[in-house]
Length: 412
Ligand SMILES: [Zn+2]
Image 1 (tube, rainbow, N blue to C red):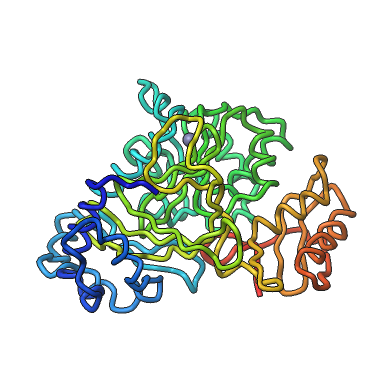
Image 2: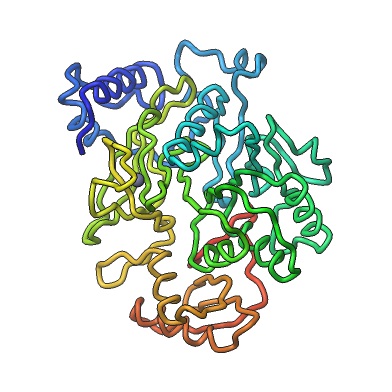
C-alpha cells in the first residue's frame, strides 16, 4: 500500500480527536503525532465489532462536545436501525450530510456510473428491504410519491420477497416500466426474484445504464438471472449502514476503496492466501466515527495493485466480497467462504445450471431449482467434497429470509 503523507496526516488527526472525544475509544493508546507512525499505531489498536457499538449506544459514540438531542431536533441526524440479521442488528446515528456525499463519490469511482449520473435524465430506483432504504420506512401500501425521496424511487414494501404476491410483483414491474430508472441499486437476492418474474411473464423491463448490487452477498445464480433480464452492467457497491461505502467495483471487475471517506486495514485470514477481514476507520464523519471497525465480512484481495480502469487507488484493491465471517467454515485449518461453496456448486452444475438459490443448514444443503430434480444431489456432492464431510442435498420449494429480510447462505 502506498498511502500519501496527506492521507496519513488526516488519519492521524481524526483518530486523535476520536480517542480524545469519543467515550468508546477513550482507553485506546494515544495516537502518535508523526503521521509516519500512525500505521504501526493503528495495527495495535483493538478492533471494535457490532457488540461494542451496541453496548452503550448512543452515549458511548457521541463526542463530548456534541448534543445528540439537539442534532435530532434539527434533523441533522436521525437514529436508524440497520437491517442486519437479528443478532447483528445495530442502531446507527445517521448523518445525511456525511452519508450522501460519500455514497455519491464512491459510485463515481466507476467511470460508467459517473457518466450516467451526469446526464440530465438521471433518475434512480432502489430495491431492497423496505426498512433499510435511506433511513425511512416503506412498509405497507404507499403511493409511488410516498416511496420517492429526492427523486429516488423505492420499489419494495414488504420484508419477505419469497412471499411477494402476484399483485406486488405486478406493481413493481409496472412501476419499473413507467419510471424506467437509469440507475438501480438493489439487493441481489431481491433483484434476482424480480428478474425471474419478468422473464417468466415475458415482461420486458427497460434496462438501466447500470445496476449496483449491495446489502448482501451475490451468488452466481443471482448474477446469471439478473444478466438474463437486463442488458446492463452490474457492479458491486460494498459497505454498510454503520460505516458508509467502503469499496466500489469498476468496469474491470475490481473493487476500489472509497478512501476519502474511510481508511481500510485488511487483516489476513490466517492460512488462507488472499482472504482478509476488513477494518475501517471512518474519515470526515462528525457523528459516530468508527475506529478500526470490523464489518464482519471476509473479502478476497486482488492479485495486483494495478487496474486497467486507470483509477489510481492508494488503498487495497479487492477481487470480491466472499461473505460473512460468521458464515465461513474451517476445513483442516483452511477457511471456506460462502462464495467458495457457491463456486463449487456451480462448477459441478456447469454452465446450463438452473439452480436459483441454496442454503447450507448444518449437514443439509437446501436447493431451490424448479427446473431440475438432479441438481440437489450434484450440488451437495460438490459441497461434501469441499467440506470433507457428508452433506445431504434436499430440494425445496423456497428458502425463507431471516426476520431482517436478508438471506443467509450458511446456517449452523
Ligand atoms: Zn479499476
